[in-house]
Image 1 (cartoon, rainbow, N blue to C red):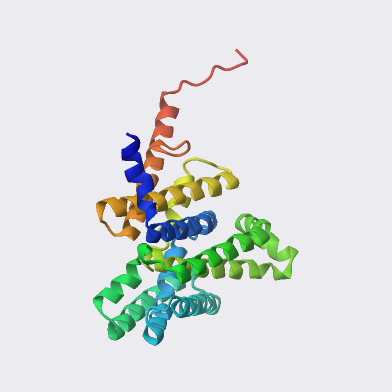
Image 2 (tube, rainbow, N blue to C red):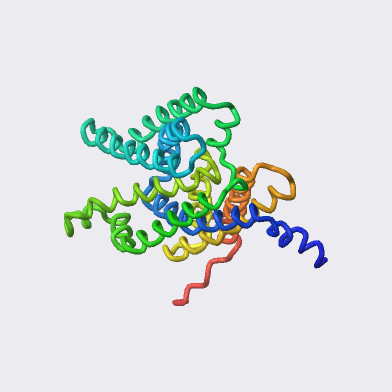
Amino acid sequence: MLALLDAWFIAPFDYGFMRRAVVGGLALSLAAPPLGVFLVLRGMSLIGDAMAHAILPGIALGFLLAGFSLPVMSLGGVMFGVMVALLAGAVSKMGGQREDAAMASFFIISLAAGVLLISLGGSSVDLTHVLFGSVLAINSTALLLIAGISTLIVITLAVIFRALVVECLDPLFLRGQNRRSAWVHSVFLGLLVLNLTAGFQTLGTLMAVGLMMLPATSARFWSKRLEGLIGIAVVLAMLASTGGLLLSFHLDTPSGPSIILLAGVGYFFSALFGRYHSLAAKWRRKTTPLSADPST
């Protein structure tokens, strides 16, 4: 038994690429789920997916200019992500269109433009690598970049945490208290772009949002407190990233989809057996008799 446990859970990390992959996955698991929790609380769950596609043209331009240079591709992704966020906000204010609708329009355009650029300058293998990532191919430069971005996100969230919570509950009150409060939303979108840019190397632009949203939505079935939501989401993301890597190693499956599918298993388990709003919770409410009236 001990030999089997060692072969499945310890021996794979004798390889350097597995150690780098798990550290990168854990770093993303610390930074991404809190952003996902706030997206869910703000009713912006699909914005994360839109921003994941918005960074694709910048990554494609970086690839055309410098090949698979992670710093150049990341810089391009950040620039285009911020530009799309600003354009969507401007269109929303000028035309009266909802911001999520404007973002959806821009993300469709960005996805098409990014795929076209990569196809013109590379091969189908290059396109697959950018769209779906390769966590097992993380090198020291990529690991440092991922760790640095994740650290920056966590520190910034800690600094703006209270303002972000107030904005989720009552944005009009926050704007009335402080003129600079309008920057909270912009900073939050910037952190979102940074996280997706860090995640594209490991999970690809199409799946980077999965490690952000699936643990966050799963946590809603286990806790009603913000601290609990964030803590549970981070733990679920860590389990999914580490477990997905091990499954990928032993079953010879793509690492990115393995991680996201394992996070999906966690979501379905939570929806079935979670403490709140799950099928099991509804069944318990139906089968538990009403407490007796204390006045009788």
